[in-house]
Length: 249
Image 1 (cartoon, rainbow, N blue to C red):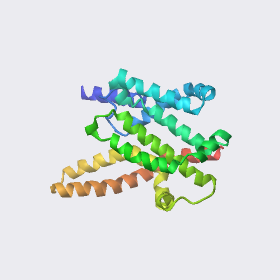
Image 2 (cartoon, helix red, strand yellow):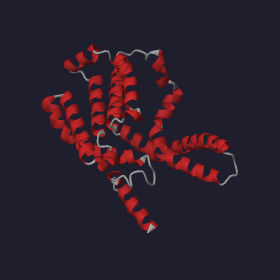
Image 3 (cartoon, rainbow, N blue to C red):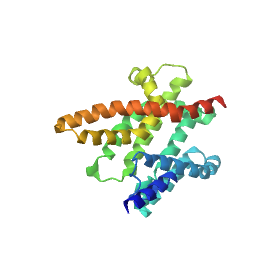
Image 4 (tube, one colour):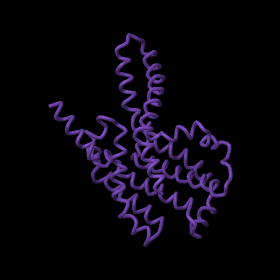
């Protein structure tokens, strides 16, 4: 029975549909839920392009949020497992990239006319408040606010890139060599850290140590082991594809 359940979940993971049910989407390797969601959203994106071309950028963002939020109220279990509202967040990111780098006069005007940095600052505390569990707000509201904050920050930063200027001091940490190096294999770190930390804690359970020592060792060893493993994972499985993709352009 146990083997049958594992094989069933393994097949669902291989097909990238394990996030269709709340009983399977966090099994095996919890961070993989987002990979399935991303994979599925890429199939939905082509259906949004006609809306973008016909009605414009704002309309496609609005439509994507409607499509993503409706399952939350109609098929709550499916929506919570698949994070269906992410289609709105992904479309918001697409819109931010278009506004940030577009050479179209209307979007250039939009990029230059709004105080994107101030909007990010103002909306950030609102985003945190909406995440407060005592308010009982649906999860998609808080995450949508954080998506809007990220979009505003992205547009704000791209202006400095386009104009060849340095980022403000508070954001210059994003250009620090350590931050850049970590960012290079951050996706591999995201995918593998759950397994590494689980194995680390499993090994620590066999030691006769105090709860404080267990927690400290879990964080210290877990972080170091995750970074080392993720870097090698990146070199073996991720970087070759990035290199071949770049050379083919």
